[in-house]
Image (tube, rainbow over the protein chains, first blue to last red):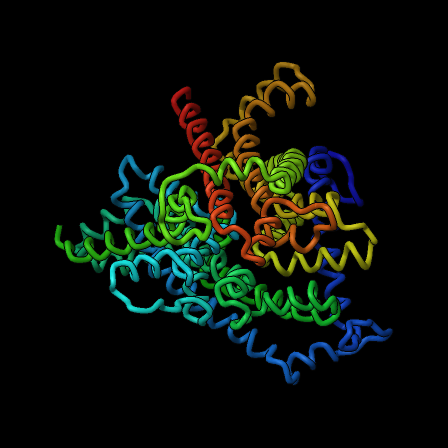
Length: 291
Length: 264
C-alpha cells in the first residue's frame, strides 16, 4: 500500500488508471467545462465574443425569432419515436435470437452488429440511394409500371425518422439480447410450473427481468438519435433541422462558438437527464448493458 | 406450443428487422457493379468502378490518411484502455464508480456535442493547430473507453489465481505482468483493437469537427463527394469497401474467440 494524496491506495492504481484519468480530465472534462464557460459569453451575430458573463445565448434560444426551440422539440420527438419503433422491432428480434437462435445465435447476432460497424455516412447514403429520387426503388417501380411518376420519399419528417430508426436499430437489439440471455431459466420454468401461460409468463417474468436491457438500449438509441445531425442533413435535405444541425451550423458554418456552446450545453443537460431517468427506471443493469 | 400466432408475429418482426438493416446495404453493394455512371438504373455488370477507385489518387491518399490515424489511435487507445480496464477490475477504491461513469461519458454523449467541445477547446483554449494530432487525440478520447469496457467484460472470465501463483512462486510484479497478466489479457487486447480500428477508420462526425486542411480522411472525402454528387457509382464502390472491412474484422474476431473456447 502506498499513500496517494494522503489516502491509502494499492500500488497498481496509479500506473493502470493514471493515464486514462489524465486523458479523460484533459480531453473530456476540460472541453465540456470550456463549452459551459463559452455558453455564458455574450456574442454578437457575427460570432465576435465580448467580455463579461451573460445569459444572452440561453435567452436567445427561448425567444429567438429563428426556430431553435422548434429544432430542439423536434429532436426530442423524433428521438422518442425512433426509440419506440426500435424497441418494437428490436425487442422481438432479440427475443427471437435468444429463444430460437440455437446454434445460429452467434451468426444472427453478427448480422445485427455488422451493419452498425460500417461507416454511418455510408449507411445513410445507402438508404438515400435506395429510396431517393433518382433512386433504385423509384426506378424499379417505374420500370414495372407500378407508378407513373417518381414518388418523393425523401426530405420529409417521416423520412428523417425512418432514417434514424434504420441507423440506430442495431444498438437496441444488443443490450436486450444480453439481458434476455442473462435471465435464469429456472425462473421461467418455475413460472410455468406455477401455472402461468406462455403469454402471461412473458409479461410477468421475462419482460420485467429484461428491463435493464430495454433501458440500456434506450440510452444507446434515444441519445444518439437526439444528437444526430447527418440523418436530418442528408435524408431531410436541410429542411428538417434537429438540435445537432444547429450545433454543427453554429460551430462550423457560422463559427459562432458562444451560441453553439449554449446549444451543446442544453443538449448535454437533456442527455444527462435522460441517462439519469434510464438508470432510475432500469437500474444499474441499464448501464452495464450498454457496453 | 400454444402461442403459435405470437411466434409468427415474432418471426415477421425479426425478419423485418434484418431486412431493414441489410436491405439498403446489399442493394448498394450490388449496384456498385453497375455499368451506369448515374448509379440507379441497372445496365450491365462491371468492375470498372473498383479499378477507377484504385487509380484515383485523391481517394487513395485519403485511405492512407485514414489508415494512419486509425493505426495510431488503435495502438494508444488499446494500451491506455486495457490497463485501465485491468485497474478498474482489480482495485476497489473510493471514486471507482465515479471514474467508471466518467469513462462512459464520451461514448454516451452524442458525438456532435463532444466534437464541438473539442473544437472549441483546441482552437480557443490550448491553441492546437487542427490536423493529425487533434484528430488522433479526439479519436483516442472516444475509443479508449471502448477498450476499457471490452477488457472489463473479458476479465470476469479469466482465472486470476494464475497471477497469484506466479507471485507465490517468487516472480516479481513486472515479470508477472509480462509472463502471466499480458498473455491472459491478450484476447481482450485483440478484441479492443479489432473494435477500435474500424471505429476510428469509419468515424465521420468527430473527424469532421477537428480535422484541418490536408487531413481529409476517407469518410470526409466521401462526404464531400456526396455533397457535390460526384460520381454516385464510385461512391457505391467505396461504400462496399467500408462495409466489407469491418465485417472481416468481426469474422476474424469471432473465429479467434471460437479457437479460444475449444482450447480451454
